[in-house]
Image (tube, rainbow, N blue to C red):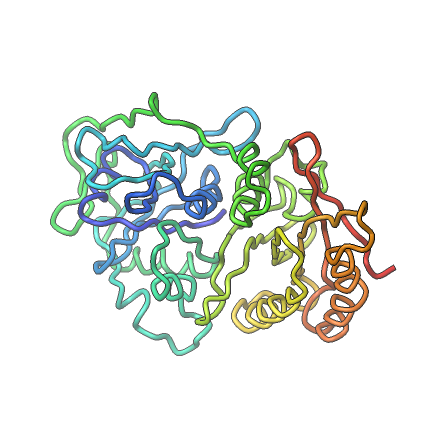
Length: 366
């Protein structure tokens, strides 16, 4: 279960509460694949905390159980629905929520982010980095960070709101009101599916990332190579993307925590073109995970690379030569250097057949 932090302000928060949804904005743009990839990571039952900039963090809500027949969670593209004028800002992508454990008062930014604990590992780094970078409306926090944030919200309140049948935000607090809850109208909204978009934009990495966040844990893909990469539907316990891991703003493309027979941390780097410097990214990610994620160790930290399959019809092409160097020199060298830090890199290639993406595991060390 992942906890997602959505940004709100005085023009959006009341509508979020009154209509029970969360959404992401991109100014005046009508599409934004990065925002879509972010919100596509939500799953039924995930927790939602709202971050009111300059005020603090409010919670706790959860994602409604709202799936399509193919196992994906429903994300609405709903750029023109201003909720009968109650919403003061365009929010492109939206997801329905419901009350979980709702408290009236927020925990302040100072208490959550700026009041430094004795141990640097206890800082909520995900949100510190998000705040430094800004511009992201839906951010994942790690399980440990989520536990801390929820604990702070609980401690800053004397009790939950008991009547959550209709809520709004007034006077700096979430409050219960007597009016009947407003119904979110989904009749004019579009359900956004990535597959066709990915085929058209196959060389743009953000679309590949959106495919991963949409389909990770999809039970219909449990028997596919794709599930080998991310984990099966009954294995994934946490899903993140564009996960900040350093003040230099390095970001892990897709990050899953799985738990089948044992817990595993899967650091997944996606490329839509061959990149011989990919091992340098993996080095930073592995070092950061070992430094700041308490549970990671040599046995459970798994780096994974996903890159395009080279065109074998052109045996002299630079792309094929680059892939050969990556397989035979760069990755084996990385594995030797980091054998005490993580598992050997798993390597996958993808291609498109009949407008569908296909993944193939490559045993590069033999």
